[in-house]
Image 1 (tube, chains in turn blue, purple, brown):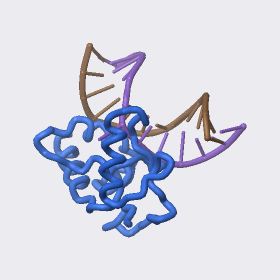
Image 2: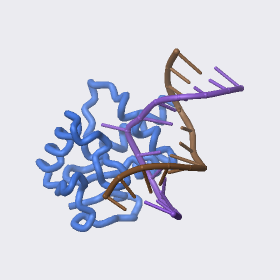
Image 3: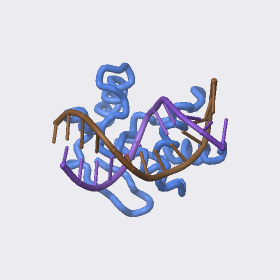
Length: 110
DNA sequence: GCGCTGACCGCCA
DNA sequence: CTGGCGGCCAGCG
């Protein structure tokens, strides 16, 4: 399964600055539909030496996957806001970002 | 093999 | 809005 993780990490690394993707999207993009949880697991076990834009990955509701009181939540929110991604009511604003279906951009763009 | 646990997802009440 | 339920499936004891 190591190979799958490589693909997942690589894909996450492709998410452009200022954009956001969901776990499900990443899974689908690497050819593993319905494996959202695997993405979460892979992300959780990312070797620290490779710095991935994990903060650009949110759940299907556009929320952080972390509890609001956690350090990570605060950091994620901070980083996204810093990139110009609106973080409203604990979730990225879908109204402003819109949904893109084309293969290259199953992403929320600014 | 078995049961639990997840940085998940979608549907329905 | 909240909560519950079933589905998903790799990892781990």
